[in-house]
Length: 151
Image (cartoon, rainbow, N blue to C red):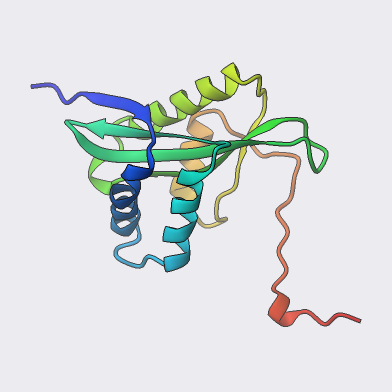
């Protein structure tokens, strides 16, 4: 029997399985703030998301939104989260999810799509390059307010 991959729109009821995918990737090291963030995005009206089901089991998910214009960008798509359960990695699940969100953004008139990944996440960097992403014209900047001295 051939394993069938089904892509459908994400739903708030998917939260428990999405959290379990994140837990599997992080080897149990999952924060309450991450759980609250994903639950928040699942309730937002302006977000888009898809899940991949392999033989009825949730294998991965992608969450994004349209933003802008802001910070010198016109309307743009942003991928906020993309995760595939370790048991389903390397089988095209992530690429199927990317294809779905690309199609959504195209239908909404978005031409440019952005995401941000950790500098040391080489597997994610390789994946995004493999689906056509390249370095953007933006730099991510960070400031820890605990260290801030304001005058």
